[in-house]
Image (cartoon, rainbow, N blue to C red):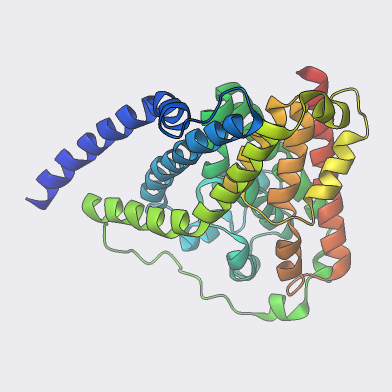
Length: 340
C-alpha cells in the first residue's frame, strides 16, 4: 500500500511542480503590478518584480534538484567513494575524483573528516584536492540554477571548465609531491574505512525518503542565502545603471577578471546565494567570464573553507592550492570573455 501511494504521489507532485513553475512569470507580474500596484517604469517596481519572480523560481529548482540528487546519493556513500579513489593512479584518479565531487555529499564543515579519510585510505594528495575543488564548485545546485537561469550552454560551459580546473589543479599539486606540508597528525590518523562489507539493499521507498530528507536538510540551510542573494540581485537589477556595470566588469576592462577573483575569495556564500547576483550583474552588462570567475572564487576558495583546511594543511600548501586554483579561474574568466 505504501508503494502504491508513493507511485501515485510522486507523478502528481511532479505535474503540480511543472504547472506552478511554468506560470511563475505571469503570477509575479500580476502580483507586482496588479495586486501591489507597483509601477513597471520605476526602479523599485523592477526590483520588486525580479525578487517576487526569482525567489519561488530558485527555491522550486533547488527542491527538485536536491530531491533527485538525494536519491542518487543513496547509492554513493563516503565509504564507497573512498574505496573507489584509493589506489588510483594520478590523473585517472583526478578525473574520477572530480566527477564524484559533483554528486557526493560535501560542504566546508565536512572538509576535515573527508580529507583525513581520503588520505589515510590511500587516496593520493593530488586526487583529494581534485575532489575538494570539484565538490563545492561543480555541484548540482550550481548546475541546476545556471541551467534554469541561463540555459544549457552556460551550464555546460561552467561544468566543463570547473571540472578542468579541478582535474588539472589536483594533478599539478600531486606532481609537486607536497605531502610534507600536510600536518603530521593527519598522516598518522587511522581511518575507519569500510573494507567492502556488504550492506542491506535499500528499498526505493527509503531512497525517496532519503531524497526528502536531503531537501529538508539542504534547503533548510541555504534558503536564507538564496533570499539575501536574490535581494542583492534585485537591487542591482532595479537601481544599478547598465552603463556603469559594463564599464567596470565589461570585456574591455582587462583588469576586471583578477579583481573579481580577489574580491570573491574573502567572501562567504554558496551557489544558491551567489547565482542570483550573477544573473543581475549579467543583465546590467557585466561580461560572462568576469562574473563566472567571481562566482567560482566565492564558491571554491572561500575564506572560511581556507581557515578550516588550515587545521590539516600547512600554510605553504594552502597558498599553493589557492594560487593554482585562482590561476585556473583567471584563465576561465579570460577565455569566456574572449569566446562569448
